[in-house]
Image (cartoon, rainbow, N blue to C red; front, side, top):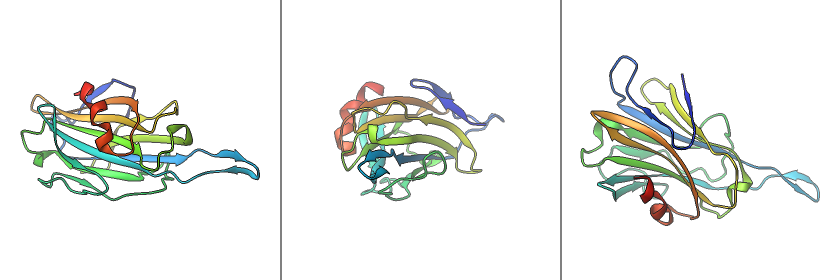
Length: 192
């Protein structure tokens, strides 16, 4: 059963049987919002990019994104760049796989962001979401839906962080501006 998260809400990533999750997928989906034009409704292609920034003691130490598909330690992997979106409320347009059991002990948080590489604002995007899936069985655990559109080009979506002997997920949902993950690091810091 999936949990629909609201901004600031968190969930434990412990399994119902008391075990811990070993591998998760953070999926991102979106569609271009239709716009009225001279010849009816049309949509523009929008290139949203998912990134995962690995933090150790509130300092970024590695990143996974469309130009660096695998973390240096191999525990986090991006499945590849989608430059147009389209899955919307269905499947994932981009996904980042995290092998939680392989994440080095000094990494205490992984922050997931989405940015419009082409510079369009979220007012031009609809049905954007991120979701966390148990990669061992395909079960969706949590979903955070981007709402409100707006004149910003990026969002700090969510984070997975160590909690006791396991992991937890917290929805952040902080709008910001930037075309790359480097532009977004200052917006991530208050959420660490």
